[in-house]
Amino acid sequence: MNKEKYFHPFDYYVLLFFLLAFIGWLWEVALFYITEHAFINRGVYRGPYLPIYGVGGIMLCFCFRPLKRKPLLVFLLSLLLCSVLEYFTSYFLEMRWGIRWWDYSGHFMNINGRICLLGAVIFGSAGMALVCFLLPLYDTFYQRMSGKWRAVLCLALLAVFVADAAYCAVWPNMGNGISWGR
Image 1 (cartoon, rainbow, N blue to C red):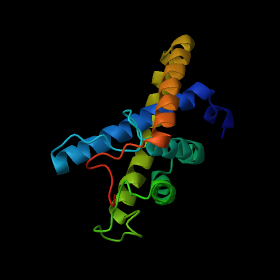
Image 2 (tube, rainbow, N blue to C red):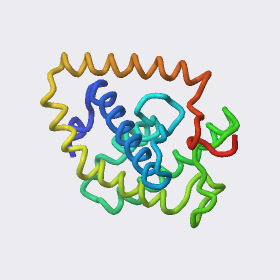
Image 3 (cartoon, rainbow, N blue to C red):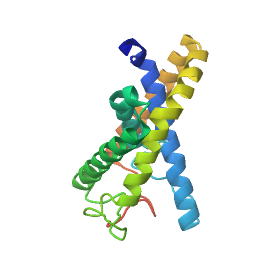
């Protein structure tokens, strides 16, 4: 196995983080639009991104990309890794602000309402799709972008994210439909 092909420049991961965080935001907004019939900007931040999806995706990329030819193994490992990430993120957010941004208490096989079997299976499937199928597409798209364009895009995204994070560290997004137990 040629390990060199699994290492990329910093901008590769920054852009991947924001792409996955945006896709996660779209997923959650669509899910709540379907179930609650309302647009709800999910997450702690104000922008159209959910960092937990970006962090989880980057972790999957680093940990499991060499296993991309073993989709069942990637599914199982993604299920576990994403569940641990989701559990501890939920715990941290609740300890930090005293509220929950999600609660699976009514779902089958949940652990303290922080994770559940359905969510774990969805994240395992998404992790498998990312590692085994979507990363090669992202690689192609990334290679087609000029280095200058990638740098400008990274700087702009990071500047907006840092400003949003600083604002939301004091005033997190806790509007109607976003959190439980306020």
